Length: 127
Image (cartoon, rainbow, N blue to C red):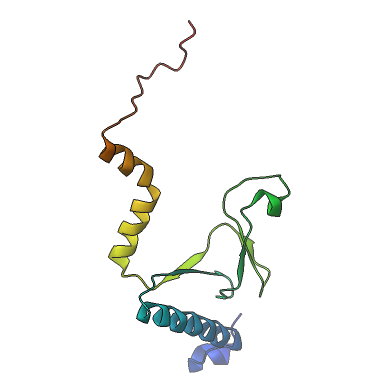
């Protein structure tokens, strides 16, 4: 919790300064990648704003137990969770469209090839 004098004076705490430094480093890395023509998304820890995250989605990491939904672990603060912040060097409107194309790529490919799978609604055909 912030000290009362820090709230009144408008000064940042040490933790806030550290978070801002980490975010600045990530932004500089994204800017450098953009200058090279590379689009990138970097996951950020929602707790400490570090980019040092481990993706725990493989069954080996989970010990063949639990969900295969993406989960992340922060090496700096020990945070573990499934929801995190993403910093990107893509323009926002382009990023949303690219993400949608990626998420629905199989549907778009099926629609372009002309072959459509249909579902007639009958779940139990063994009657």
